[in-house]
Length: 244
Image (cartoon, rainbow, N blue to C red; front, side):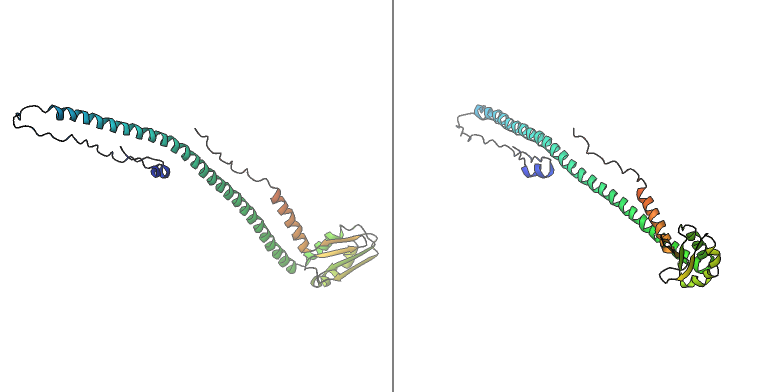
């Protein structure tokens, strides 16, 4: 009968049936026919064995074919089940990888947005500082705004950068006159304060109006807003298809 290779079923999920070995029926030894027998006389024993041998050979072939088909059907069913299981596992792995990539992509984009925002704020800070250095009245406006927020008027100290100090002193009386009942008002140089900004000190506390502080506050507000911004719904994860 044909040979069914087990390793071929396991590796490929298919069955290769080799060509059935030809069944050879050895006829019985020929009998020596007596010279007295006519050559035209029939040979009953030989003629009777040929159909019988053919029938037996056909039975063997049919039996082998039936067994092969049965094994093939069984292997096919088993192969389909194993194939579905393997495909299901591979599909799940692929989907997990895809979902992880989508998640990482979103995180990268989010991190990039924050970095871009910080970079933009740094650029804005440089522009502001450049404008402040060119326009001294900016510092005057900032100090005026800061003084307006002061509640304690017993003593007021305005700390500014040395470059702004001389300019602001020209407006000392004007600034002091903004608040009624101020007993002490002074403008002091402070190297820790950038050009254009100021710090107002009182007996109750201080008002930080430095340029860097303003930029930092804006950055925090924008980053917080970006973090709280609802993200688009993530792509729905694809479930494994139901097995038949």
